[in-house]
Length: 485
Image 1 (tube, rainbow, N blue to C red):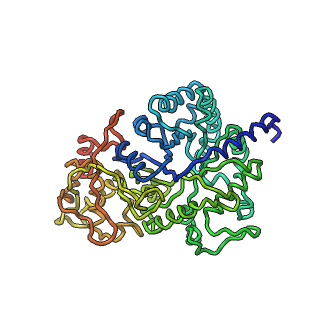
Image 2: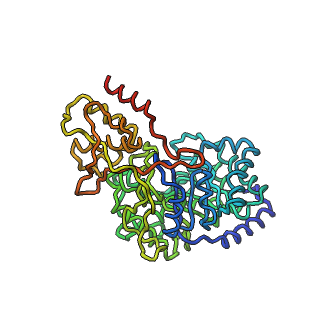
Image 3: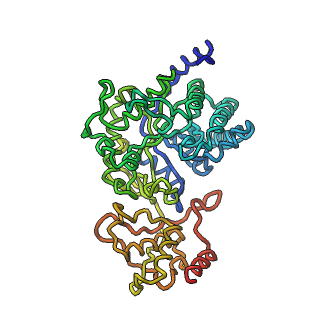
């Protein structure tokens, strides 16, 4: 810490006082838009307001999204995607241009309550193999300088949402917390910069991922019911993974001289499909338990007091990468069309229940299914299903999923319908050679949680089509022709 001057120490003291006064109330939520058919921004903003969300975290700076948040009072964390880090980190002019377009314009012209700029999203994930190690801090520094130059630095703070894998424990307990050895120096550089600029450390914590990755992980330790055997850390008892994880970070910060740096939980939640442990009951139990856990404001052993957190996430995203697992498309507390998945009391509505999206417009009530006359051993079935699932979303199929109990014909119909709906019910999108047909009879099973969805109507904003574009007629015909050959 030899680079910290006396003046810096005075500034740090002022920073700590400022951050104590920088209070945030209410639960936040992540609003992701990686969907083939996202709901219009005005529908989402009404959903946020109806459910009492006072803070929202975005992953980009879409103009229509930000403009729609104007005059709502909702506090916004706007995001810079990882693929833009090199641009704003490599050019001060580019950083100033980004701030002018995505912060200044919306604050001054649209009255958007922007409070944070998220520089990147989990850029130090080990799976990225160091791709963003050299460009994240320059981007953070340039954006902060641009905010200062634009006069926003008192209202808008920079942060870097990081995965919990940036720290580890040397003794298996929170007290052994320190930053990962391979990124220790860059983490200290970033943490020091956040401290000097009165900015918070943002971390994403996912007990579900621990359960998904380790079959021996104690299930009850992921939840907040107090049913797990506590873990003792020098006499301090931890009854759930969240507290232990957050305190591992707190110890890492303390060990490196930043005991008072504010922490925001940027993402926390539980998926509802795509894995045997991803279901509505576990998701309800986890999210309701988390809300109850933080509602008293008691915090964790290392960080007593209120916890600032953003649930992950508001709504399902059917175009997300499933490289981490099929569950990635099912983190929402609402379905893709804004319907509540399970009872959840956020403490923000008079009814104590989630309020669904209003005014959602759907396509026609029709589905694409396997022809009753088609044989399961038809040679066109396998390539057709493979193509449909590869182009659409079949993550609800498989062991332990919501549609895991479908028979063979049901699985095939589900795949066909997913592709058909994604392509706006284009007739040619249901022409799998001799094995598919369009029906107006809902194929959804009468028992269980499996649902054959009807897609919502596409949304066209100021930049044109929003979401993942469906295939055009020519493309569909070419693909169908390729299946015939």
